[in-house]
Image 1 (spheres, rainbow, N blue to C red):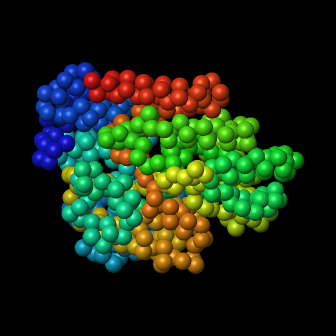
Image 2 (image 1 turned 135 degrees about the vertical axis):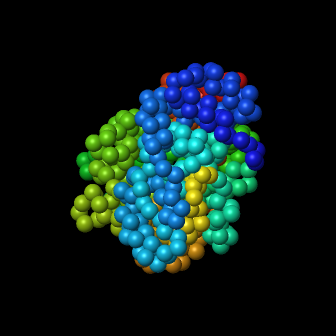
Image 3 (image 1 turned 180 degrees about the vertical axis):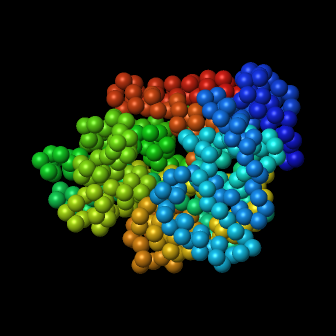
Length: 473
């Protein structure tokens, strides 16, 4: 939306929708009359969750505004669970910075729901100063379009921004302004089991997709552990499989709105590369995985010593390594840049960070910025983060600071950032595209039920249909 747009009447209409006093259609009509764009209207509708509306209204009405003097850090719960070093380092921070105090809390959100935040904004207040756990391509565009976020530009030191690779800076921007303070970065890379490569006689790490597929074939043919070890696997969710391979071919694969351009030839090429890997994947490749084993089926296979090679973000293999047994652990993990086609290509990958969004109606923005600057420049934070969680720093200067204190696999991952791209920020690109319509026809293609071109045509048609339904167009 344009600068200075008055969201207050739109927030009130959203409250009426959540309270059951108006309908979805009437909300859309009224919001349009108030001057809200179709995309911004869609951002509110994406946040709307009638199942929790009553409780979210009650929570928003009861929530006090963030008190001046102590910044309220709203964490997505998993951030604290997987990064226990944050609490003691924050305690140390508070002991040193008496005039810029912060307080850790778990934010009232699940499954990326932002309804509570928008209901609080109706009162021009926020009980939170910052949302720690925001994924730019998932929530950031939505909350920005709904007027809930403020850019970091006035609070982020230039030294912090300039320390980010340009691709990371671009990930956090909307209309030239920085809405994301990056924290934990994942980039899809090639990972393999060194011991399994050795047992199968593999001496060369694949650098092309043709070599990747051939290596997977050779490992499968070696019948390691009595044939229990498959050559390779990947996570068939589109943003974790299609898009890394697409980015290895080309980065210019989106429309100007940030939506997937299904007609770009890189998509069909990537589909065919991926299908060529499937014969060498575990037999349960198409299983959704289980909550009990805590992971998608590719992750489960890595944990169970059933696959020799994968491409995904590194924390998949870092979390699997302690379960390998035989005294191997993380020393048996190899990591290299994602392959690209033998005929050439961009040589990139897909990455995303989990960062922080600044609430417009927060009261302690300078304190939050100071805390993030201090925490994310501390080499102790990153030493623990890399070793235990497998996510890499989004700041260039950190790599020299932690050299020798962390496994060397982070350096090829970092080197690929310069030629990689994040999924663009848009209200609908991920939710309707990569996280929506692409999945079913892509799986049908992998199972031989349709061609790549048919699968992409269906995804394109379904995307446009759902986009029209969501925006009223």
